[in-house]
Length: 373
Image 1 (tube, rainbow, N blue to C red):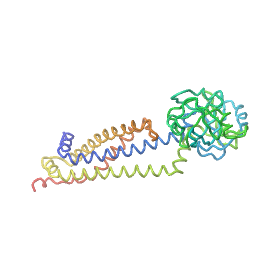
Image 2: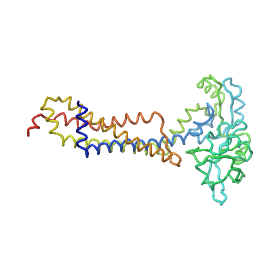
Image 3: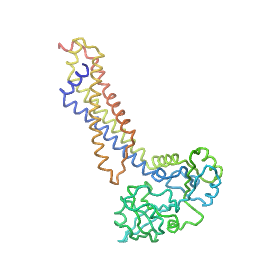
């Protein structure tokens, strides 16, 4: 009965109700849009780590993110081969490069040199071609999002990277890195492009045997390689994201925007609900005169906040879904984890209840005698 009264009051006061719903939509969409972009950037920051087959990454000393790993001696692979928990260990080369398009325009790239024949640590999604085409000495991949940067090459077209001849053998599907435009090739070609000495590599990927304890294996590797950094895959992923959040200002920017969006939504909800209570003050007084308790008034206003929140959350998620669908194939980073909609809906509903507290406080103080004035 009290929920029905709350619903009828909201329907009767359409303008204040619409304003409160708009506040909820603003909270959900603006905060959701900001955080989905942040989550998308997270996937860019640690994309190579998250999609590698390896369980452990071995990097140069003092490495603090996966896109700046330093250099290592290739002989470290031989030291690792003696450990019982290791299935395989492969050195990988990364280097900055400059590619020349057909029209002569230069574009910066990051070249990833994969070890043959396993090609571990390589691309995982293709629009055209496959990872096996990188076994060709000159073979490289370019991403579908970056085709325009390379002059829209076709499969088999020849380009230059650091004045070295390469051939586009495959096109990857939406593989983007925060560290730069990715070009995958085999390790031999990457060494030629980078001029890296034969005894050096950028990092070593390690796959553990099935059932091996990751922490114990990492401790053994650190003892064998005291001059290197040894990271479990998930740890390096978190370190990389934390590095960019702290050192690029992204964390502050997105945090401030999210906070301001939440505050704006709370202010809108508070003002509109308080205005609605003022306009319906005599109605609440009549309810009190007819025997309604303060508890009943409290429940009525709370039900109004829940109804407004539910409608606003539905509309907000609808707008957010349209935004995510529209940016799915664009260069704008956007990603939503499966847990996020539930947490975001609960957070938004909590803000609705918080915004209604001032209105509840005023509504429960209405005296029955007000109805006769």
